[in-house]
Each structure stands twice: as C-alpha cells, then as structure tokens.
Image (cartoon, rainbow, N blue to C red):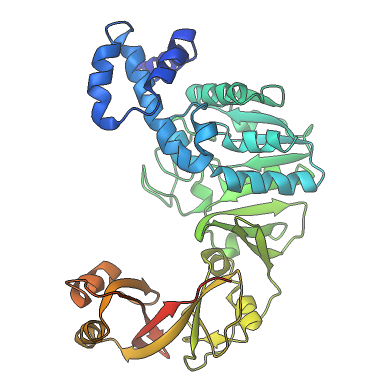
Length: 415
C-alpha cells in the first residue's frame, strides 16, 4: 500500500509546473546518459521527482510505437499501461465502427490509461472511462486533458460492476488478460484459472472481469464491443455476437466481439486499410498438389477461420488438410495473403538444403514454419552457417500430404 501511495504522489508531482518542466528537460534522454542527467538535475530538483520524470520519459519512448511520437510525448503512462494499451490505429478503427453505427456515447469499462477513450473522443463520441485503480485512472484523466479531450472524456475511479450503462449508446470492455496485473484495468480480481500470475490468461472466464460478465453487460446496451485475446476459441463466442479478428501490418492484435451488429458473422480486418474479409461459411478447401505459387494467409484470416474464403478467391487448395498454406498455379493479387513463387520442393533434409543454398550462392535465408517442430533459427544456423552470396531464399518448413517437407521460393512483390 505504501508503494502504491508513493507511486500516486510521484505521478501527481509530474503534473505540477516543475514536473512538466522536468519532463520537457529529459525528453529523448539516452539511457546511457541517464545517470549523468539525474545527477545534474538533482542539484536543483527533488530526487524523487527527477526519478519519476526519467521513468516517464522511458515509458513515453516505448509508447511511441503504439501512439506515435506526437501523442506519446504529451501523454502519461504506467508500465502496465504501455504494455496493455491498444495500438492507436486499431483503437481508431474500432471507434470509427462505433461512430458509423450511430453511437454518440460509450461507457469504456476497464479503460486503462485511456487509449481507447482517446480514439472514441476523437471520433466525436462522448466517453465515460472507468478504472478501479487510482494511478491508472489518474493517468487516463491526465491524458484526456493533455490531448485536449477533457470535455468529451469523463474519467471515473470505480469498480466497473457498479457502473450503470443504461444511459449510454454503447459499452466497450477491455478486460485484463494477464495474471497478477496490479491495479490494472478492470476489477483487478486475481485470475481464477487459465493462467499463472503475471502470465497470459487463456480462459475467457479467468479474465478480469470474466467474459460472461462482459457479455451480460454488453447485452444491456444497444451496441457493444468486447476486446478479447485473438486466441479465443470460436466455441466461446456468444451466439449474439459478431466476431472480428484484427491485424496490423501482418501482426494479429486482437479479437473483438460486437453486439448490435450481425450475430454470427465472422470477419477478418487488416490494417492499415482497412481491408475486411467476411465469412460465408464455406467448407474447408480441398488438398491439392503444390503448384507454382504458395500463399500465406494473414494471421487475422487464419484466426477467423476464413482460409477457405481466400482459397476460393485464389482458385487454390491446401497443401495439407491441417496446414493453412494455400497453393495455386496462377498468381492472383489479394490483400489477405502473401504470395511466394515456389522453385523447389524437397523432403526435410538439412544437408541437402545446405548444399543447394551453397550452390545457389544464397546469403540471406528466411525461414517460415507451419506444422513443423524445427526452430527456424536452428535450421538457419545449420543450413547457412556462413552467409555469403548475393541471393535470397525463403524456405517453408511444413507438411505436404502429411510428409515433412521444405518448400523453397521467393516472395512475389506486392502490386
């Protein structure tokens, strides 16, 4: 408790004129120079304030990847807040969807440091942002003010179960999905099962608050969006919900359960863009012989179980009934998969691969795997111990018709 109060006092000191001036002074400090900077600043400022300012500067630098430099250098963060916050582009996409549904007010439950509330407010939506942790709520309030959104965002320090959502057009819930997240977003209850303290939680009922509570709350509002882990089992998706998997730059970021839209619909959305692929309930594509081209579907497509939709678009099939690689004889552009031209198909054999790479003067080897227990770095080290030569090759460690196989090829440039 004393540590928590000390953290609150340190954060409050950063909001004072002296604290803000120090934040400006330490902006961009190289970690290697921190000791010298701290020593110099402590001659004129309290040691605790200097430490807090340097700590906040580090967090702001980390947050630039998610929020961009312009926002991150004005915002306030906690360590958990940086780690758990939604990437700004993803939050903005969700906010636009809610706005386009006619939503004008949202109860943002488990708001964290306010990243989603900021995106909603920038979309012109009035937000009640709720978090039970005093430090997290203070950061959210400071961020709303720092970005000039205080008139649209009300921050409330409270337990989300005590919030009446009836006055709002929509509910947004981002439950804690890590064990032992101290004072983090949501109710702050320890995980009951599905994940160890400090680690990721895989059981949706071990979220804080549990998914069942979030669904019950969502059903009380005209619209709702529940952020969940992208690995959520499809059978855990409520019948009343639309399920959307979102990737950014090829990396799967989250899944969202939407209420008040189209129950049962499944979609994969790729950012930037957005490009959205809708599920049509197609049966699994058949297996066919490896053709000239191999397509690697985006992770959101795979998580959404929409590989069949992409295979139909490409007039392709699977290389193995359990592997999400699509093969086809013709090259067709698609935003939902990366294309590779296959030059060789070999049974798994490291010596043979090594000899082939040497023969073709390969200096750059990219290793991808799906359905193989071999670690890419281990294969790269064994097959290309001394990289030399001007050429590059991509090797896929996978299975073809159940047999361990290596497929070699080159990425096809995007149109």
